[in-house]
Image (cartoon, rainbow, N blue to C red; front, side, top):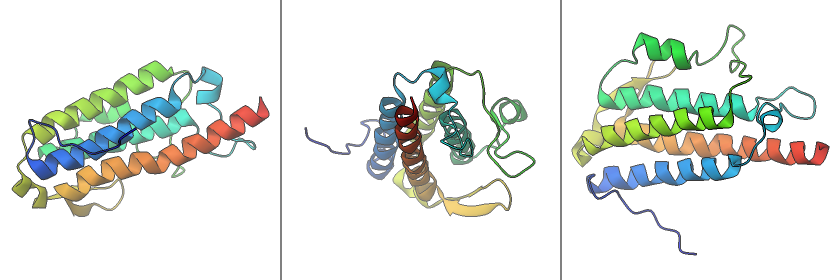
Length: 173
């Protein structure tokens, strides 16, 4: 099997390449969660002290949604903030996610990736140097280039956690 990152035809070259990394990791997230039952989706590790796959998918989605709006040059609307947030709960942890199906979580996630794709088609390679703010506590600054890369990297980072949860779950069941 040949792996390659090919830019989107309707995006400028560097934007398309960065977005291709997002798509690669988006498809990987869909593959590694495929077929999860609700019990596994909500499983929090052997001692029930890790974030569940459901929490991680919702977190990835919310981070990506925030960055997609920043890339579009718009603040995240309050209704979306309430619907998908908060980033962290009052204890500084990922909010609990229960009784939300994998198909609902993944459909929402794919919708955010589609929104990002639409935003990326509007960008030129020169736009990648534009500075945006991000973060949930202290607003930090980054280029749009870093923001798109971060969406891909952040997803892959949490996919390692999901893979570990899957191993533990299958060992226990």
